[in-house]
Length: 81
Image 1 (cartoon, rainbow, N blue to C red):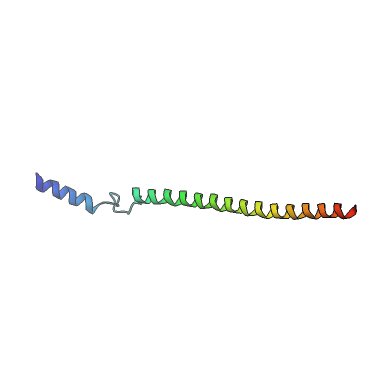
Image 2: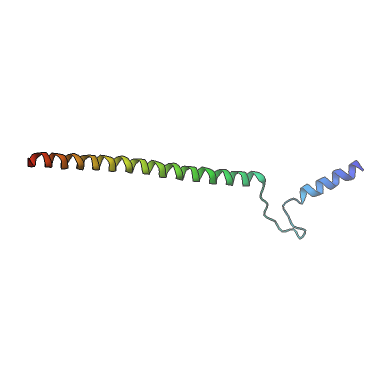
């Protein structure tokens, strides 16, 4: 019985990835799915980080511009008197 079991395992291993007619069937392992999910999470995280960095940079630039404009307006008003 042990011998037959080994033969059955060998046959099963030899036919892995093929249909009964001998055509190759696409297989997707759990590792592939895990790597795909990991890549997706990484890409989303990178996008969020880039968006946050862009928002902070724009906020800093706009803050500087409005501060300079505010100071110019204050100087103009003081010069008028």
